[in-house]
Length: 446
Ligand code: GLN
Image 1 (cartoon, rainbow, N blue to C red):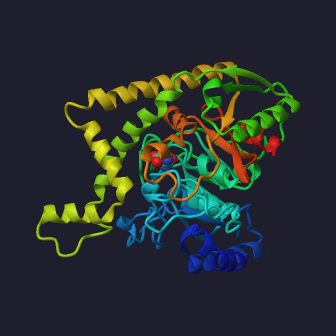
Image 2: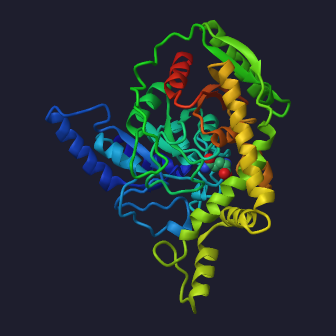
């Protein structure tokens, strides 16, 4: 009740929620009370959380930030939602996001942008900006997010919270509306690494309903949080410390590294030589996959349908034309072009080859060091409207986060101070399945 009241009072300023699921929340809270009385309570029993509106939630509108799904009430739960329900958590609502998770500022949402609680003239980042703003604005103790090219880490950094993108395949994608299936990964967005560890305990695990889910035992991520960092080898990629980054961000990250040295870690410079190719490769691969994934929204089976179509072609054209926003259309067109006959080898195939090179950069670097660190973003939160007219400037905000999705490894952002009064994020990157180590390193720092 206290969270629901706070959301009603404060969220009109932040717009972090697309839907407040009051009825569901109250009935789940009641069930949690009963479980508590019967001595059946676990860690999450009665704990309110918010879910990114990309996770299908039974009986609740699941919009993915799009007009296309504004009328879509999901008939089933995503595995992530189901896991939290089973754990006894309470769903406060569904959080705002860039349309179909395409964006870095939340400004492509059909429901209007969410705002950064630290300065409401600024964006919260994206695409999981609503989740980040809700946690930072104390409108939820924790939230779920998804990260295709930085969408957990970048908004976490811009809103001064903690977020982890697990190894690709660690968290089930079943019921998580697909953007770019080979890159999408769900994860927690929380105040602290300890909270993230508890959330990941619920989210991670094999799921037969997701063909890319990995059948690997899930450790209890809270058990290793207090391990010493003595001897931890940290690598600083020189490509992440170029003169393109805000000097105050560089200074805060360098301070954080000094703290790690004080905790017993050693630091060395490393190189991820293909970093500059990550954005061009991603903006072929992600739109290519999106153009295919989004073909299901045709106005026939579910979602938006135009008024009075004259024939089938008119139905497709107008439903998609009216239902999708600008950025989504741009991605569908780029992706369709890149996959079309005659261009496939020049664009898509080349992008996949670059993807392999980028992955190899990380594999090689992580033979030398345990964790790679650097800034999560080149700049702190920017003003609403500042980058909307220049898509490439917007894409460049993901320069330090996007390459990791191409490699499939886990990455995390933790708050490490302020630049011009706005939060700065420190990024931690580890090898496949190194989530426990990242959470441990983040916890020791916090
Ligand atoms: N900002 C990137 C994009 O627009 C990444 C988004 C994401 O991770 N979902 O594609």
